[in-house]
Image 1 (cartoon, rainbow, N blue to C red):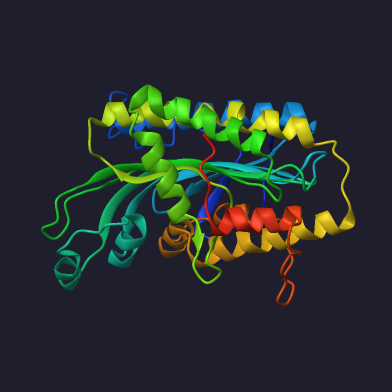
Image 2: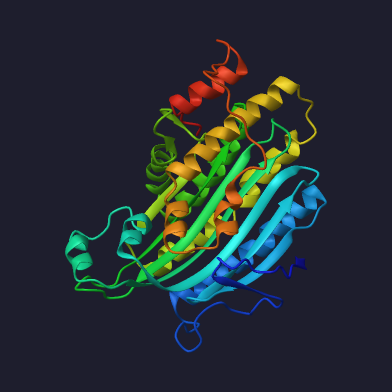
Length: 343
């Protein structure tokens, strides 16, 4: 794995480091028996195993940047660009802590505390801890779907009368340019099995949540064809949610890679490539306008290169484009406008 030493622009608040630390946690604070330490181990191991699986398929290694954040914590960014299979793939891990402006509380939590406005009036910043793994993979072949996953743990300390809180969030979702029902059954079936091992109510709830979260509001269509999504999850013992998150992130490869292997050598036309680029444009629209993770990262001074790693290398916008009725492209658009049940 290559580790780059890059000159830091003057407006960035992180420092590149040559040696990846054993842990990004706070020495003497985040002991090994804490959820914070256990979750860091899960995401660090997942980053290693998923990158290894992608490199095995693509044949090109990931570029790695390791960095520390002046306000506390750091991360490991791994990106593969212009590979043999993937146009761009990234798998990021970050463990950060410090304080955030009260406005970021709303971005971090879908349901901020009821007395947030009163606490804001008292002034100051919110002490927080956040750890997560995030990934987006954009293949070259339009018959191979884009895939995204993100798993995170967030914790705040007592602040201006608001008790400290913790929650988990995350999910894995798929964004094809063409509907292949067999592929969607495989992807959704893998995650239904994961969910059922922990709570049979999870899959229907998190599948619906995924469809509703990834809505491009101004288009009235979803970004892709779903998966699972959950946020602000703290309704049971933290160890149980940790076990579920670990199971979910450890099934990314099983859910996604067989689909890529199946289609990575499929022939395609220039028109199909253009359609893929139009759908990539939708991906960009959602991430920059609606995505909570992007908003939170920007509001807390996050590492811009890691935040925008999710953007595809190329995308396309055409004026008033609408696929021909009855075409495979129209079928994809119908599935995005009317979410379907796959399993």
